[in-house]
Length: 159
Image 1: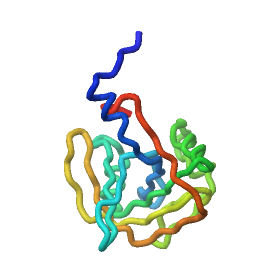
Image 2: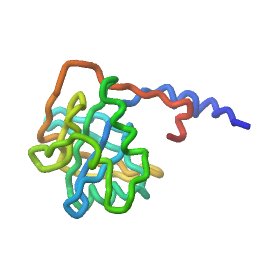
Image 3: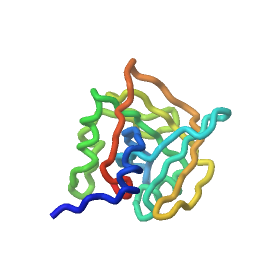
């Protein structure tokens, strides 16, 4: 039996988000996840906000490394996400099967994406069950013309 999301959850689910692969380094190895709670919040300097569930290992890695990269997905590259949803054997990662290259700051970016941004962490803020990490975008590139993938959730109170 499926439960119908509350009116609040349904309304929140209509807020569109993008689809991104967020990456950093942990002990010199690439680590990443599919993120959607990201937005630009400043122009000079350009600042992004990224919400990460507090218990995710990726948050600890971003805090330790002090940087994160965002790969912007589009319809042509949206399939790259699937590698991040699979279980991998110990010592293996999604980056073993995806074409990627280092950003100027050495973070992994997916080569077949729409665009990428490389950010230096500038602060964070606790927000309920997530932590909002702020990053100054220091490098970035549009890899081809196109529009980013947009995601809508049926229930705005969960993934």
